[in-house]
Length: 477
Image 1: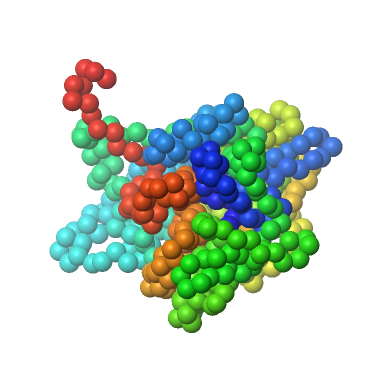
Image 2: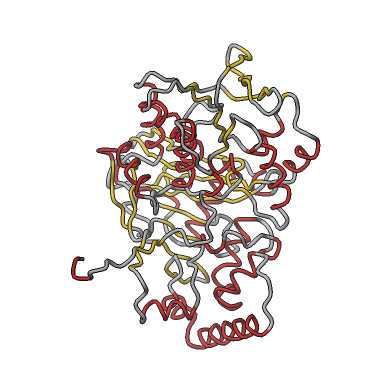
C-alpha cells in the first residue's frame, strides 16, 4: 500500500525473490514526496524534485541496492549547504569556527559564556531534555540556539521550539557542542569519523528516477504497480488483514492478499479499518499531526543563482524556509547551460495563511523574495513558475505525541500480516534511506527473517557521520 520509495523497495526485493506482489498507489505517479516533476517550456525541459532528496546512508547494503537500481544514471555531487541569516552566510551543518566568525568576537564571547554557564548548570542541577529548545540549548548554549536554530525550526514546525519534542535533534543537528568540536579537531578519536555530507549520490535525471526504476523492475519481473488505485478500506478478521478496497476509475474493487505492507499515513490507516479500530485507538491517531510543504519552482534564464546544494533561510521576513538549485545537483535538470532553476520550500499547515495562498500568489511571493530580499536574480530573468502542494510531508513531534503514537502502534503491531514502513507509515521523520530500509526489512521478514522495523532510525545518533573502527594494524590502512 503506497508507491513511495519504501513500498517500491519491498515489492522490488520480493519480485527479485520470485514472490508475487502488487503495489497499490492512489496517485497517478510513483515516488510520493521523492518524485521528480518535468516541466516542458519553449526553452526545453526543466526537472524539479519536491524539496530535493539526496542519497546518503551508513548502511552499505542500502548503498549497494541504490547503485544497483540507479545504475548508469548515478552521479556523485559535492555538497555545499549554508545558512542565510541577517545578511550573512554560515556553513551547514554548523561548523563552530565558521559560526563564531560570522557573529564576531563579542557575539562569540557571549556564546562561549552562555554555553559554559549552561553546562555548569546541568552538572550542578541536571534538568531533563524535553523540548526541542532544551535539546538545542544543551548542545550549543542559548546564544547559538537563538541565532542558528530557533528561527528556522519555528518556520518548519509553525510552533515555538518549546512546544516541540527534542527527540530528533541529535539526528538532525550536528550532535556536538563547543567543547566536542574543539576536542574532535585536536584529540584523535577511537576510530575514524567518515563524513556522509561532503558529497552524495544522486540520479542524473532527478531523485524520482530511483522510484521509477524500481517500478520498471517490478513490472519487468512480472509483478504489478497499480496507479490511481488508492486504498479506501482495510478489511480485517480480528487481527488479520483479509484484503483492501481500492478506488479505481471503474469504481471500488476488492483486492485480496496474504501479507500487507503499508506506507500510507499511519493516522489514516487506523481510521479506515473495517471493522473499525477501537475508539481509543482512533482518538489517539487523530491527535497525531503532520506538517505540509509547498514547493515553488522557478525557471530562470541565468547560468547560476547560488553555489549551494541547499540554502537554509532563517530570515523571518522571507516566508520560504529553504531553497535548492537543481542544476547544482545535475546539469540534466535544466534544458541548457544558459538556464537554471530554483525550488523554494514553504512549510505550512492546512488552513494557515501560506496554505491558503493561490499558486499565482506563491510564485509572485517567491520571485519577490529572490529579487528584492536576497537580490539573487532580476525579475525579467524568470521565464515561468509553478507550485506543488505536498500535504502531510513531515510528522510533527509536538510535545506529548509519544503517548498517542504508542497507542496507535500497539494496535497495528498486533496484526499478524501487516507491517508499516516509511515516513508516513511509521510516523517517524525518516530520511529516504531509512524509508527504503524499512521496505527492505519488511520484504526480508516475508522471506523468513525476523527484523524489528521499529528499530530503524531509532538511534539517537547524528545521521551524517559514521565511525569506522581503526584497524588492528594501522600500517594496513
